Image (cartoon, rainbow, N blue to C red):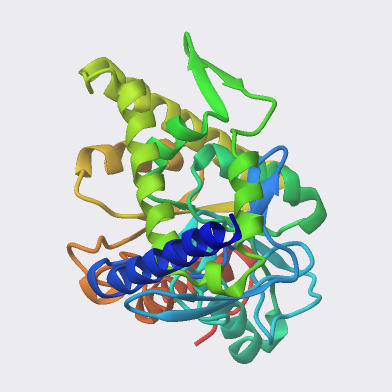
Length: 334
């Protein structure tokens, strides 16, 4: 029996090692390394607290650090200030793809600190990757009283339309927005994640990362396919209505107490829908900033991964600095 167990274990390890080598040389794996997030009862997931994680991909290696609240943090961050700006969004706001201090919220904080010393601002980056508008609305409600921001930047990406269906934090019923009182399923996967991350070798495995990547893609497609019921016009309109309603709720929440809200949209190849979103947000009195799509400004994006590279984050920071200076009544950093 002992011999059989040894042979079985040895065979498994050899097969795993062979598949690991094969995966490293034949499969493009986007995310290798420990997860940035952990399970949360209300939101499903939040960033790990006081974490420092290194993530490797075919195009970049990034260092990702969080503070005691789970917000992304840079070493030279402003600790206290009378003015703070809260950034809400997904992996683009989170800064996936660049090192600490290179994400656009950190660049904005640095610009004010170094070039407008009379107007230091404290940046709070509450962006969490792979989330939709509904998640971001819940996150904003959770942190706004603790942060007391002077202004809020709300980042939007086209995948929010599908993410809002997948997450099911909110649903539309006869035009009424219904909020769920619990997070989506995910506890079992998080337990498995914690087991894997106890071993640095397993957490850095390309094979496991590839399996996770494939499972996420299949899961998303299955959820959207099940809800779409063939992708007819009625479903498309429901999909748009849900997300636009959530965007309106998000902007209204950000504007509470007279705060200024800036809607940061990432362009894509649907001018009709972009125009619809733009009109809805502007009708609420919020400012709107659009970032060129990858199709029109590929220099700002990673070719394989699709997120902003360091040039992209600098470009976005340059767009937002004068907007925030005007909102906060500050001199525009040069």
